[in-house]
Length: 112
Length: 113
Image 1 (cartoon, each protein chain N blue to C red):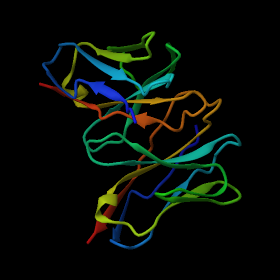
Image 2 (cartoon, one colour; image 1 turned 90 degrees about the vertical axis):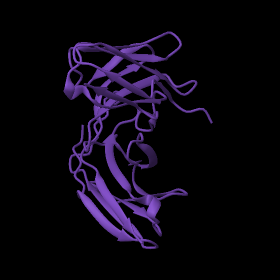
Image 3 (cartoon, rainbow over the protein chains, first blue to last red; image 1 turned 30 degrees about the vertical axis):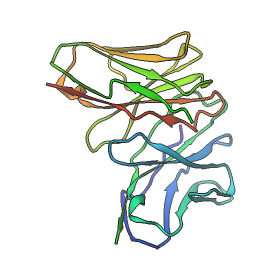
Image 4 (spheres, rainbow over the protein chains, first blue to last red; image 1 turned 60 degrees about the vertical axis):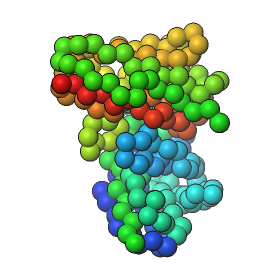
C-alpha cells in the first residue's frame, strides 16, 4: 500500500480557498487517490476520488500532476463547518484488496 | 438514502467482559470494514469481509473476532475487554470494485471501565 504524507494541521479563514497537498511517492499504476473528511465523533465521509489530472464535484476539486506522486485537495471558500480532519488514501479499488490504511490526516481549522 | 447502521451507539462494559457490535451495511453493498479509533487518533483498520468471507486483517487483537452473515450484516465480537479497548468503532461498507469509496456508519462508542 502506498504511504501518504500530509501536513499535520492547517489554519484558514472563512471564505478562503484551502489547498491540502498529499505526497504519495510510491503510488502504483492502478492506484486511485481518495480523500475523506471526518468531523469529531463521526465516521469519515467520502469527498472525492481521482486517478489523474483534475476531478471536480460539488464539494471539492482534486488536482493530480502527471507523475501522480502527489495530489492536492482544494476546498473553495471554506466555512466554519469545514473544520475537520482530511485524510488522503491511495489504493487500487479493483484489485487492491480490502485493507484500507488511514494515515495521519490534516486537521483543518477554519476561523471566523 | 439508506446509510450504514451500527448498534449499539454507546456501550459501557467492565474489564474482562465481552461485547458484540453490529453493523448493517447499505443495501446491495457486499463489503464490510471495521475500524477502531481511539481518542485523538486516526482510524485503524481492523478487518474486512467480502461476500461473507474474511478478506483482509489489520491490527485486530486476537481477543476480537468478526464475521459477516448471509444477509451481509457483520458483527464484531470483543472478549476479555481491556481499558485500552475504549474507543469509537466504525463500520463501513462498499461495493466490490469500489473499495476506496466506503460509506461509514455513525460508530459505536465503547467505554471499558
